[in-house]
Length: 296
Image (cartoon, rainbow, N blue to C red; front, side):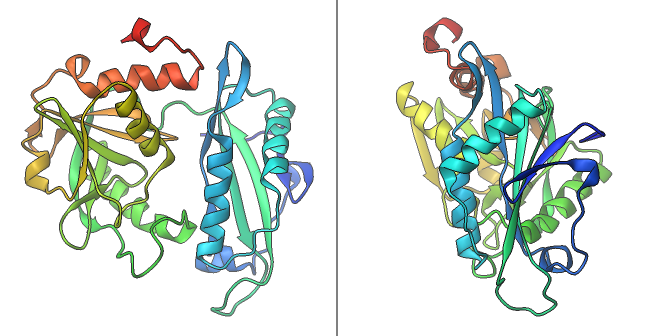
C-alpha cells in the first residue's frame, strides 16, 4: 500500500512539510531501539462535517504513553487537535486514519530521552482486518509481561511482538492471531482487544496484561447504554472455544467479527450476535447519528 505521494503533507514539530521531502535521523534512539510512542486515530465524514473520533482521549493517551517510558512531551493537546484537523484539510481527507508519532533525538546510549519530536500523518485506510469473519489462531507468542514494559503505553518497540504473532498466523493460513498472557489467560490480538459472547452476555479480558484500548472503553460504554451485561475477568482459551460468538475491536480495526479460532467455529450467526448490534451502534456513534434504535 502506498501511504503518501508527492503531494502528501505531514506535520513535524510545528510545521507542515511534504512527506516526500522529510528525513529522519539515522542515529535516533527510536530507529535503533524502538524507543518511541504512537497512537492511532480515525476521522469520519459525518453529516456535521469531518470529525476526529475521541481526538482528546487519543492525544491524552499519547502523552501518557510518552510519560510512562520517559520520553519528553512538550506539546499542547488542544493545539495538536487543531493541527490535525488542518492536516486533514491540507490532504483533502475526510474518512482517514491518523498516526501521531513521538520519536527521540540521536542517542546511542540506553538512557532516557533528553529530547523528542512529533510527527503526524494521515491516509485513507479501510477497516484494518477487513469485513469478513476472521479465521483466528492462538499464537505461540505471548503478550509481554507487564513488568517488562508498561502495558498502557503504546510503545513502538512492543509491536515487534505483534508483528511476529500476526506473521505466524498468516503463514499458517489464518487471518489474525490471538495472544495469551504469561498466565495463559486470553489477552488480545496483535492490534485489537477481544470480546466474546456466551448465553447473552459479553465477556472481555480484565485489565493488567492488555492495552486497554479507547475503542474497548467505547464498547463498554455502549453496553451500558444498550443494557448489555458485560463482565471483565480473566478468560481462558477453553472459555473462548465454548463461546457463542466473538469479535475484535480497535481504532484501526473498528469492530471485526471472528468466525473461528483454531478448529472451533462459533455457532451463533454474526447478524444475530451482540457483536453485530454493537458494530452497527458503534458506526452510528462515530458518524454522529443519535437514534441507535433505528439501525439496530
